[in-house]
Length: 143
Image 1 (spheres, rainbow, N blue to C red):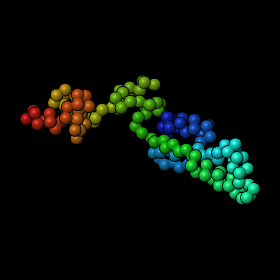
Image 2: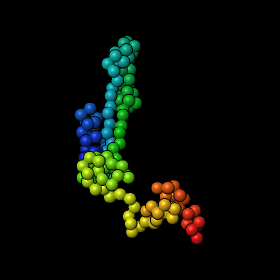
Image 3: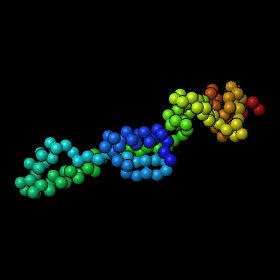
C-alpha cells in the first residue's frame, strides 16, 4: 500500500502526462517521454526527405524518444507521517500536519547514554547526534 505522499506525487505526475513504467512495493518509476518539437521534425524532414523519403525524421523521433525521456523514482521511506502521509523530519516528535505522535529516536532497549551530554544514542553509533562526541573516545576517557 502506498503512502498518501507518494500517491499524491503519482497523481500529480500522471496529471502532467507522466506514466508509471515500473512498480514495486517500495518504489514507483515514472516516465515522461517526448518525440521532439514539431519544428525540429519539419527541419529534419525538409533536409532529409529528398533523399531518404523521411527515414531521417523517423530516426530523429526515435533519438528524441530515447534521449529526452525523463524518469523519476519515488521511494517509500520512513519520512512520512503514518497517519496522514505528510513529510516529517526524523527529529519531529509530532506530525506538523495532523499532530499525531511519531515514533522517534532510538529504541530504549537498544540504546546507550552519551557520557558527555547524557543524550540517548542508538547502540553502535560512533558519534553522539546531540553533542558530536565520538562515543569510543568518551568511553576511553571515562575509564
